[in-house]
Image (tube, rainbow, N blue to C red; front, side, top):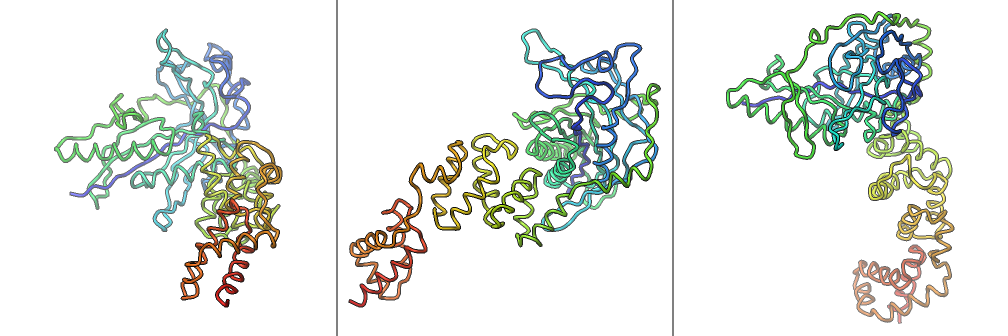
Length: 479
């Protein structure tokens, strides 16, 4: 019997507001524990929350970017549950009247476009964080309490781990472009909950689902779905039933384990938040927000293909993050060699970023520097091989490309007389190559070129070297 994997996702993204959702405490990450607190986010008796207007503005922008319908009327609700990192014993969220409804995200799977439905996007506050590493036992940090979130809930349209990753990447990318979230996974700015079930292939009825919460990387997302779907299939083949439950994913061991039975909406005893007024947004305000949306990744990709003649593969990679696209455009505006800029941003630069644990946000040189490096290649000052060495030094912050080339004496040999003298000696020392060329084996030219580059330590201009090699070999054959 064949089974089909069905996945629905809930994506939580922290919004880039300066203050929390219901108070004026800062949302800054990484400060000492329990320093961003006040009676409101600590849930003290008698306090009154006030909704941060920027939270609504950012959530509307995210909803429009994900093709949702924005509700003219929505409200906040209390979601009741008891947990040590939730001082109020309830979370202020949205239940039956969310801010955004019915969106779509188109993903590309094996060259085909597939729409993934968005059920809803609602706003809510984050909970705190439990710290289990202390010798004093488990401690709680409530800095994160009240940090504004949007929760993006998908339809169960996702089939398998690859589609889930592509969908999550597309949503992350969209949120980055709109500027509503920095989506820094290492800081918990975006987290994934996945509902996984399996069913017989061809069946329309959904299987019993399990949920895994707070996955914080695309790799963990794929691995968790792959493991959990396989586990469920094994259980079904044994004749066992799947239990609806919340499971914990252990990314180190690569396994999931049961935590608790899965709650349904009625378990949270939702009721309207009595201390907050409803959210009312006019059609004019929604239109204004839509008009202010920046260029989205898909539109940018199409423009790059048309304007810069980039292949679709290149355009996809370059637009995969907002900062890479910004770096690309800034560099192209300075040197007007889009394909060469794209090549650096797709191959060499990512390799150095990974090696040095950096991102495009923290890259140690500017678009002006990359443009200068490309121009040095184009005008023949350095070879492509030497350019890779220059790039290494740029990551070590040794200065601009011109300064690095001058410091290491890496400029290509442009002196025709000096280069010809070197080539004549190489041709003299390799009579077999000359004989091979005379016999019609043109590949021998490549060997001679390699010897020239070796003798000049890569500093010979390849085009000039090839021209002189052919002249010298031709003369030698005629002798």
